[in-house]
Image (cartoon, rainbow, N blue to C red; front, side, top):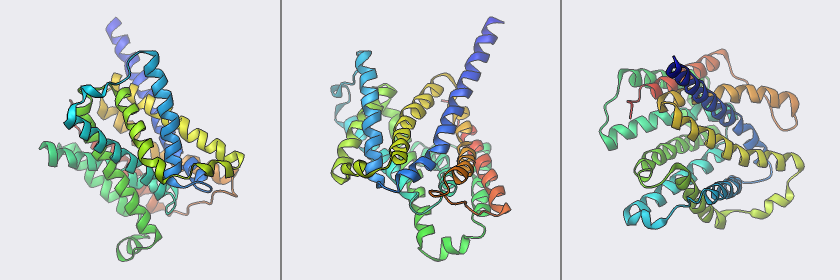
Length: 309
């Protein structure tokens, strides 16, 4: 009975941490949209990496577990560089896409990331697809067609602002999947926090020459608070995500994270009401809402279909 109670506690703890991550990642695009009013995507990402990097550095220093580059070797060192660049591209593209799309649309398109990861496993690791994964993938793309039902012509027949935004977010999904695939061998010689710190440091160095750090001086209080939230979101969101993976199956964590668009929709409803001078309502028909629900379900099924590691 005691073991059962412990397992139940771990289950609910894992679920709570995953849900916390889903909420934080779901509302993040709303705050990023605020920051984009006065700051570009590269600079926003630079500050997020800087603040999160300092936090992880202090944590590792306190525990006397700072990473040693000598443990990597040449091949893993190159892999670390590649993984870092992929995550940098993912962060920047996620923010850049919000210049072209509303937060709800960006989040729905980003749900293709589990499919990209699944596809990468098939191509690079010769993994076999489960029936649940195939079912999830079919639902995912069916949902996307429903979600974009009134914009399909714009999406496929022109390269306007809408199509550009969708392509940028798809690029973000691909780079996230690439990062996820590359981190697997790196985690054999580094802890998750050590890998995160090294990626933040490399990312900061890559982004700095292309950033406009002085843009912070032109921000109003609401923009400063939004940027601060984005930085804290990076720390708390990824911290909860990492801890959830430590105590709960990755497939279940990913399935809960598929709920993130729900919180994007809800937070946008609140933002439009509270800050109408900064946000406008996204007019979606009933087919788009049905499509969003199908996409979320398909994304969750794709995650649950992953084989146990």
